[in-house]
Image (cartoon, rainbow over all chains, first blue to last red):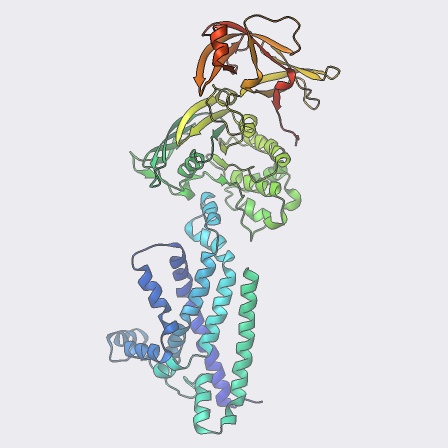
Length: 223
Length: 363
């Protein structure tokens, strides 16, 4: 089972897109998870619903909304063009954004419920010992919720790796540039015999299996 | 110097009103559950905010409603020792100890005093309950507190273990000049540790002063572990009388006979509890008495509660600051014996009626 050069490139793009998406999810997801788990503020329910929306929305719809937001004709798209110097749509960065948005709820949920499970009495004890809120989080809350972080990161990464519907709308299917593994499989099934996609299908299946097993283990350890 | 002036009304209807100034090394907040003891610690440590009042320790205001001061919990330096320890489960004992440490120099000393040396690299889950509480105390003391707040720190331990922790607490209090505020509903702990006891009932300060006096002041003081009306006499162990099956105590110039106390050291202070119903009063000393204690006393007051009368006595020859003796009587006896204020009586009780309150195990 040997991948063709184009397929190797697709695997590389997939890993790059999923990893970068994961970084985005973590940067945004950890503080948001803490906020939702520990603080009450106006608009909380709305934020919660918005962050979870991609979980229930068809990915194609999410992709459509993203495309609409990011298109060079929209004001956000124009602003981004000025900021980045290029149009975001139909780039691997757009694929990353699509993957991150669609996978975000999985990471957020795992992280949030792990933070909620941390005993607030321990946080109170830490504050009484003079710890700042940031130190309470980094030294007590986060270490005790780390299994949720690991599980959420693996789930989010896996979901990002398999993202198709939103990606194809905002990033297209350009071999060597935005074509990830799922898009490559899609192309192969359109143009060649069905069996031509086997090497990629098996690669993705094995990778996903390993990741899910790791996520399960992380969750079990946290209990 | 700890200065508290606290007013708090909760939605549940619970009200706390407390004014307390103390210079004691250990102030025990004592009372039944629901009296507001833990709430007082919450208000000192900043876990909740009073409606009005102030919290000052050695002149530093942690909270003052009139001056708009309300330091956040982390700046108050009033760490707490909780009933369940609340150690950080993912850290070693060492990491727990130094978590809030401002100087690490005292670590060695604290480890030594609390005998935690062998456990430094262990996780809290690998420790016994008593060891965990020692770590919790050490962790708090290393944070260089303005005051150390202890919330029933021994309640989750079984009885023998409790008395093994108390000496550690006493040693720490002596070495680190840190005032303790100690919440308990155990009369023993209050007596063995407290310099002063503040008695709380339904959010109000009922009495405040020297431990034995507060805990044995009259028939109606609510003392969860002692019977209502129990007297507490602080006496000195004078002699072992093994052949008589007794020991001898002195309360100032008053000689008392009590049960044997073989492990007690002569000259040691011991609290003796005496139930109000175990004391007989006579107008004159009867002849041929089997009871070993017959003490001259003067009636300070007589009160009647629920068809029962209680006489409060001052023993003749006892020091002025000694606790009074409470005696339960029928109303008929009060009438027939014509008992009233200032009447001289003899208080009679058996040696076995005195119940020494001492650590059952010494650590």
